[in-house]
Image (cartoon, rainbow, N blue to C red; front, side):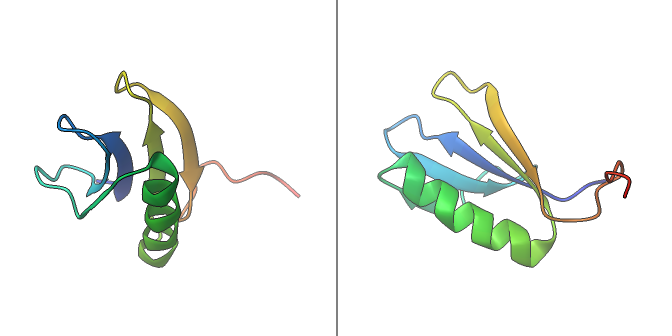
Length: 74
C-alpha cells in the first residue's frame, strides 16, 4: 500500500486535504491554493504521493515526495 495525500473539492465548498483512504479531511481550506500548499508540505514530511484533483474530482496533477518506483536514470 502506497502512502498518498489528496487535495479534493469539498461538497459544501472549499477544498480539503485528505490522507489516502481516509473518510474525513485532515484539514479544510477556502481556496485550492491553500490546500495545495499545506498538502505539499505534509506530503514531503510523510514521503508520500500528492494527488491534486479538479472540481470534477478527476486527478489534475501528481507529485512524488517518497520512494518513486520509477526514478529517472542519471
